[in-house]
Image 1: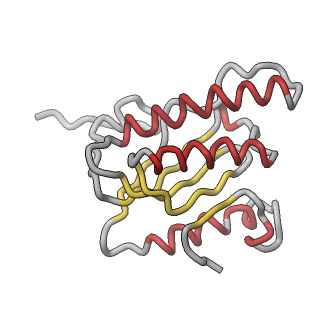
Image 2 (image 1 turned 30 degrees about the horizontal axis):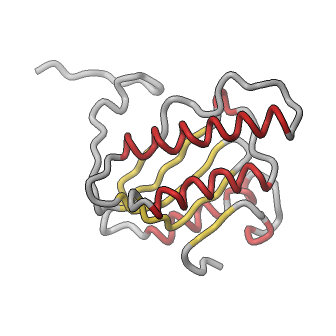
Length: 164
């Protein structure tokens, strides 16, 4: 069997992706060309409400979300009979349409060609990893990016648990 070389960004990079219902995932998805789109509370609300809708429909169990200007981080449990691909396609499709409407009408910017990059990073959280530590790492992202001095001052995040 010939070993394949996977280059960063290659369409083959995630060829072996699989879904494990009942497992916890850390997901990062970026805006198209890393454009800094998410700057308003309304942007966060669209993303958060879409994730809560997926939770109400028993597709995921949401544990954490943080919306940075050019990407988002989420931690959720994939519910039974769901695939990561279907959940992410549904999430990105819906939020992409809603965000484009908001950006063109309220923000008075030109209609962006895309909101999301095609790919996303997924990490299945294993038993020996602390998913609380992953969420704390994400929570400090705005501090590392010099958006705020203290993580709790960043307004665009939500967590099921007390992290600070």
